[in-house]
Image (cartoon, rainbow, N blue to C red; front, top):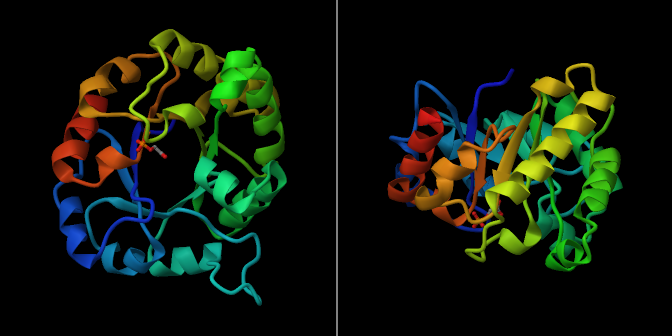
Length: 239
Ligand code: PGA
């Protein structure tokens, strides 16, 4: 079983001076990761937290202006990468097949991929959340996935950056479903990390971390400042 993971996602925030926020976040009991803008990865490589990218191309190199490859992220000092974040899916039209190809590229480069899935509010209202989750799991996870190189992040799109959080029963239902699907497909499916993401804050972290099969969090807005992220790391360590 992987160690619990508190993962931050800075999105398109942060200049070099902001890296000082990462200096005190390490924790003996849980893994701490921050997925940074590509410009900050090399500068952060010696800080006492793991560093990740926020996206990678499916190819190792080539004529793809503005893109970044998984070997480039690894070379800069990243050990993780997010794939299929909902903002990549919506801003850049990334499909499940794209996400699987990017994840496979991450594996080939020795990175741990955090594959993001989750339903929109319309899907939740239509009552088809678990069907959508099934489709995303089946098509976004490549066969190269193991509990060592892949983590799943369940992030309801409607909870990201909105301050809205599903009930613990809703989180529990989806996480148990993801666990069951992973166990059906992968010999080590019982050991994959499964993060919850979407408006995690110091004030709700403990109750979310108490939900079965939640092995950590993917945190956006509340990961930018040590004063906000530190208590979330501490809540995970205490869970
Ligand atoms: P949020 O973002 O914590 O700001 O809701 C989470 C995410 O997008 O990973």
